[in-house]
Amino acid sequence: MRYKIIGFYLLTIFVTISSCIGQKKEVNELSIKKRYNSTFLPYGAIPIYYNLDSIKLIYFDAILNDTDNVVIIWDTGANRVTMPNLFINSLNEEDRLKLKIGSNELIYKEEIYFSDVFNQGIIARKRRKNILFTGWNLFKDKIVEVSYANRYIRILKNSNNLEGYECIPFSIKNNKLFTNIYVSMQSKTFHIKDALIDTGFNESFISDSRELSGIDMKKSRQVPGLASPNKNPFDGNFLLADRISIGNIHVDSIMICVTEMGALKFGNWTFTNILGNTFFEKFSVIFDFRNQKLYLKPLNDWFELYGIHLFYWFSKERK
Image (cartoon, rainbow, N blue to C red; front, side, top):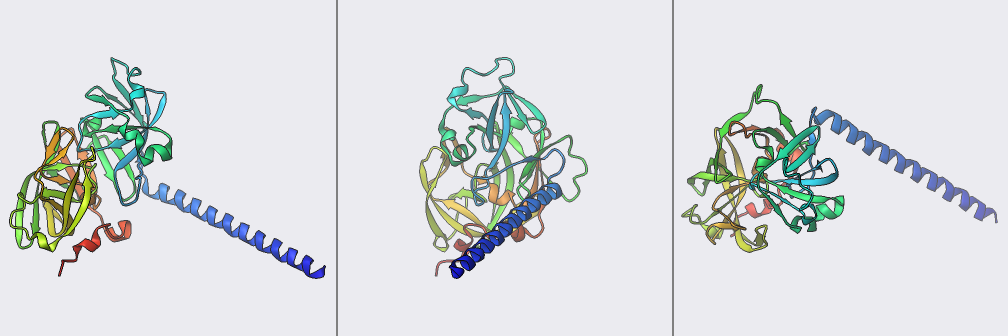
């Protein structure tokens, strides 16, 4: 009997200590989150989140027409809004689409499509909210800062006081955003005159082998199963590029994807060159849609912020 009592007391002490440790850990994690948010999120910042840390598509919360809590996917490679069918009869004909994003109220009067395709993803299930897929022109005539490091976007009043940023012009063709870049690899340098600026593409850069003529594809690792949003697969080959240059700044030793299937088709759109998130996440990014300028500022200690890229091991050449 005495041993049973001693055992009971020991068990009680163990449970109490475990509970205290758990509470302390929870308090510490909460304080870290509070300190992180207060340190890194500036005034007016709108938090963004990813469905996976390795897939940095830009999601954030919004209120639609003053009534519905929704999740926004913001994709600069697109130029329209796609929203669930349940909203077909709820739009105001005058304002079309009214969104409150953080403290900002936006009126969108351009192209709108209706489809439930984006409501079938992991974010819709996790957040239990309807998904609105939006293009760059959601912020038409606005200036938008994107911080991949601290996970926020922010609408700026102007583009003043941007010391340390490289200013790069972009063009708008067929309601799409394009800029000039240079890709250097295998002792060759290619001038890409119209690279699509696409925050909906989760790699650094993709092109067709005919654009990058003379590249030795044997020095690559083939990655099957890459797919466009309409789920049409195409084969891709990852290669290590020596450098991608834009304006007077560059990123060295970066993985790119090269297809051997010609131009890429995304629904009714066809592209040859796409510049995506794995490139832009290495910078503090500001889109000045008002003046068609892109501002980039290189981040310090990139690996401390992001770790090793998912396809880092593809950089090893085949022997």
